[in-house]
Image (cartoon, rainbow, N blue to C red; front, side, top):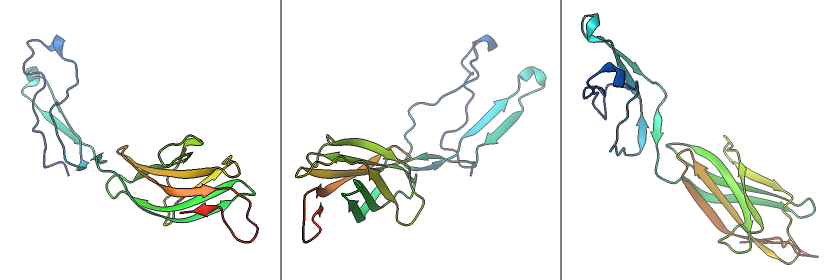
Length: 181
């Protein structure tokens, strides 16, 4: 786990002339890591006045995940809309094998490009086979179409949006008419 170093260890104080200039911190710049799991290793040295350098190396066992790719939003699997209770539930299929799904967001727009009717609201991820977003108090006005905006964000804070679903609240007497694709 910690045996293959991406960056070789180097003394961050080698260029300093006196110990009083030490900051007890170090950083590395110009590092371009491909997506994947990395482990942080910290090395501490004792002073040469104690009989030579002894090194203590600590390797963190929880990986630091570098993920620059968006999550995979497969599809919306089901929609349940109840205009009497002003409630909608949207079941979806999304995943991110590297950094997992951090959260889902739901919004309603006047067009498929905005969220002017209901701004994005954050929903915690569900660790289940068929995750869903449930929203109450949609505030839909009869006869005004609304575009559902749903997006998922991974733990690398990269998101993917799905927005091709149109709903409209209107009076229907003989058949369900609230959901349009």
